[in-house]
Image (cartoon, rainbow, N blue to C red; front, side):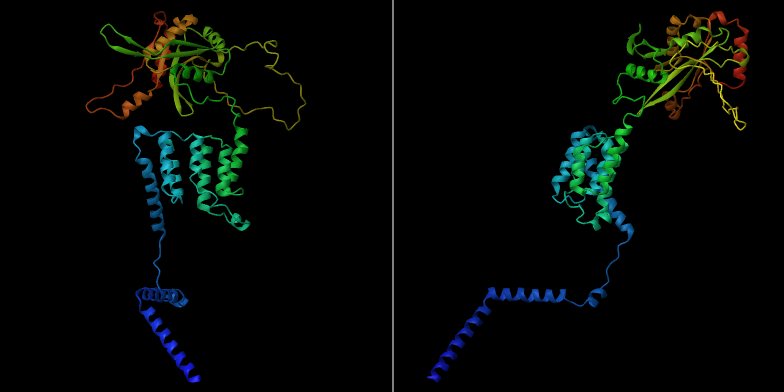
Length: 450
């Protein structure tokens, strides 16, 4: 019995060994064995000694290579905006470029370079003062990726490059005077967390902007009026700062056709004068001339306008007359205070004040063409309410305007620009006045331009 059992065990073991050999010799199992061997080789390579890993040389990257890579990435992001033609650079196309970038990659790779390139190109598209566009740029950041998980990450400025980019967006908004809204705060909290640097920048803006919003007592409207006459009215009212002054439109911009059939563009002429200036002009000595000077620049936000003055020389000290003080002239703001105060021996009663008398200003005007013919029309219009101008000689001391400066900077070949002539307008009644002639000759001798 024992011998038969041993024979059966030997036969069964031989059959199982044959089957195992067949399985091992099959192609599927051969592939599995090859893969298993490869994995073992890979694991053996991964578990190699650290000395052999350190012995391999690693190529070093210089700082210049990093800079070139960053500039290349920034240039590639700017290509998205440069592909837009000049005539179609609007808010809609700017938003389309942002949508193209966000839909191109789910992970938003290169979003920091794209945002920096977008901030540079906003002025070209005319969206540098649009709050919705800034919120759309913040929406480019991946959400809940750069939020610090513990106080250590928060303390060591978690993801500094992305936080600096978010602060740069808020700083550009601050420079253009744009106040963030609730959507801006929600986006910043989703992207960087509640205790991040961009959120703190947002809190500072929201603290100071409402306090400085109405500080200026003479605010400039936004946007400025496009009509040149309305813009001249606003500018002259801002310069005069006198509620009693009256603005007069002497001529509106129009097109006139001459007898020969030529079209002439007539400029606008807007002037301003107060009753006190009319009184000063009425008391002016007819033997002394008045001057038309300009142009003087005035900046309203990014718009520059020019104005002209009608003024006179300061009165000599020997000809000044002290006006009698009228105590009932103004009850709200007294013009003189007689206070008998006790003085100490160390009190200094002398004041070091430099009084500079520039002479009275009788009127102001604004026009698009500051030539002598146009300003003569202004003086003729002033003469209706100020008849003394018919007796006073008027001298023009005009500087080179914007168009004349541009023409002088780019002269045409073969042509020479004539010098600006010394212009003068005088009434026939004052031709025989020797004092005006002597004063004019003395000014010319001193090299003054009239």
